[in-house]
Length: 189
Image (cartoon, rainbow, N blue to C red; front, top):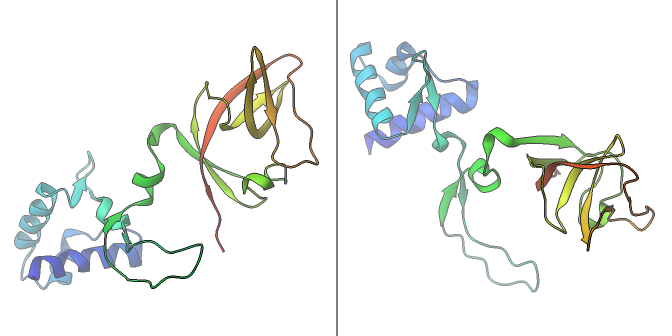
């Protein structure tokens, strides 16, 4: 389908250059003789929510530009025959982020959460929150120091617990403020 080829060319341009093409570049990219068909095609893509515009009229990519194919599952136990089957596409944002405005990343230092699978150099995706439930991994300020640990609640007692036996539980002497809850760990191999 010609429209799909055109969309793929625009997506490829964006991925290679890390910016959206201008109308003149779209005209050349798609082989149009003038900018008028480029404007019409872009408007069609905006109507289909494949492209967006910011308040200044500049083109913005949609989720299509960041999506990754989901091909199936892989066995982590006993080996089994693998079948590659396109199940869907998704963006990492839609999988990992529920509240974009409250979400940010932090780089992990130290090894106090290694038994939870979080090691130095990892990135943690966290969501701002002033409350968390027992067992959540939180970023918290405890007695004027910042740390990331499991939040534990035992009756009226609230404390932070590391995931490494080399470290002790942290019982606040004065104050414990939850700043964020860890939503995901990102490690690049």
